[in-house]
Image 1 (spheres, one colour):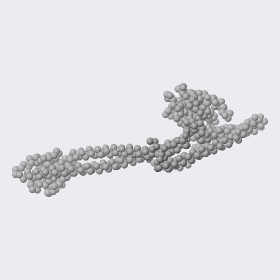
Image 2: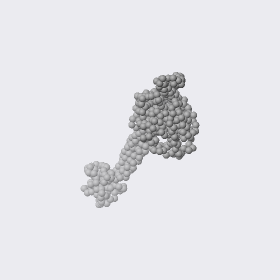
Image 3: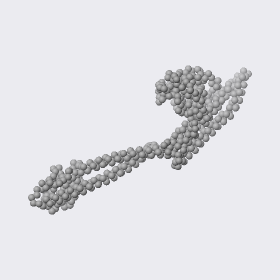
Length: 528
């Protein structure tokens, strides 16, 4: 059995510490996120560039058209004013007011040093000084400026023949509004393009990483014991080397494990013959123990204990070799969970194979399990209970409580009394002992082969083989369940076996659940 004690050497593959060589694949964001971000950033940069080019090109075109139209109108009005000023008796105020203007434009006229305007808000002082100076010097000019934050365009036309200068001011507020609307539209288009780029990147990364998903699924299956899982490149030349390397690695791993299992099995079988001879010899000597001196009888008792322990270890190694090789099979029966546990406990307390007897313990069955049926291999379940009882007897003063409870999906193991679902999806078999409990740091390792925790002490003839709890975990896993150790303050250790009522884990046929060769396609069409 596996106590909770000092660690002892373990065979390869049995949880022994080793130096691991790790290759860093990436850091920070995941590959899918990086590809998506790259597409999104690329789309944002491209759309921003195109939006900027579009905006400034459109702005320049709109402005050029507006300036050309304004110049045509200003020169036409200036020509009309020059003609009118040549006529005697022309009233300048009436002339300026009669100038044909478009909505939003205002006229300013300077005649022989006097200024006339069609708008109080736009007079000589509103026109930029540089514009005035240039036009008054005899050069036509145009200039952009603003009045109260509103963009304006002024066109100046000199009229030297009549000693005058004409200025027409055009409001560009409508053009500015058009450009603002265009900017918002382009920004929205850039945002939509960015989102579309991210979506395309997500899709492209999913397509590109689909082969890795196939490899991941295969690796998970192999980690679960399905060693005959292989991957297929799916006709993708870029993935053939990856698939071939992965399959070679898996084949080598499978071959190594099978060779180790065969070696363990062969050694165990070879040990059976001398052990049988030793057992027979011990039995003969025990039949004449009355003729032996006291020291010889003590030596015989020690030999008998060691032979029994060695025989149990050989049997355990044979069972483990069958589990590792995938040749273990389940013989399932529909049973009542409470009755199953009662019979298993009764068989265990009646006496183990080595003659050890355990104190009878009543079985508590929670309400709500009436009519519930469990598919289980009764022989293996009895072995599980026997190993738990033996572990408790050797290292924890025996079993103090056995209970059968409905399982609760999603409830933490130590969250208090279970609240059964309706109907329950699993059952929990709880075995508590009288020991001091097991440190949290040792609980996971306790199910490793040959592991001995801090309570093991020195090995004696009555000590377990170090394989019992690892066999418990394997038998439970074979049924699609799990075994764990929960907190039980002040009341010893609490071992909990949880078995699904409808097993969805490993199936009959192998210990690891592989019922055939599982092939995962990792090519470009995998999962389509």
